[in-house]
Image (cartoon, rainbow, N blue to C red):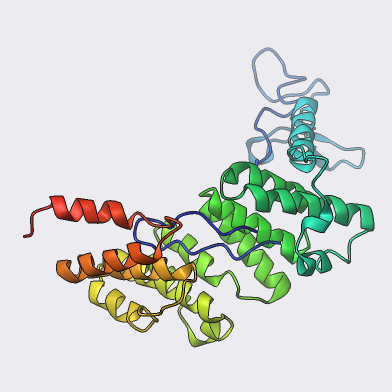
Length: 311
């Protein structure tokens, strides 16, 4: 799947790595309130009181045991319609092929029947194409794939990443957890930590910073995790701790990886929070120097700082 969206203002939103609810509608159950006398009491025509366990009238079965009143048929039809809409998903252009999916991703779908795997793959291709510009529709494609292959880790990863891109952080976290149970991988740990941070749980975000999790991440993944955890430290007003953590990463690298501007931006922001304005300005300039794709708003931040009088 394509690289993720611009990071949050502090540079704490990690890049996507590639990818592979409605509830039941409310309403009064059918049969509730039927066979009542004019007084409104629960007596039945047969002279026996209706069972009102849990405050909901029930009716006896032939074996004498009560059962809940039937769901309203319109409610069931509504549920089926909603589920069918998710299953169908958005339209897929005819020129989109399952072969457009990454080779390793296609291998993850090999356990599915051929035609099913083809449909799932095409939805995943669309999710990858749309995630940057239209994450909501990308997520609908991922959900359509999930409706067909809910036990496939790759599909759950796609649901997690598209939900994350769409700002559905609780849903994204749930999908990433499901994918981790299926695959045993920690690839999305930085994004999971960022979901916790977005849900105002910085302590849980920091809890991802363990030797075990870092041992499962490559260099880029570890840097992304440091960016998120530093942001969580700042959420807790631990500004110096955030600065120290980011200083353990290769801030002075001459590489041009996508994480470089995010790392420098996060460091500049942490310095600013720590009261080190001049150093922050320097690192915002260093960010601009490597941010040719405008992943961050470092230029705008510099303009703001120049307008703001020093305290």
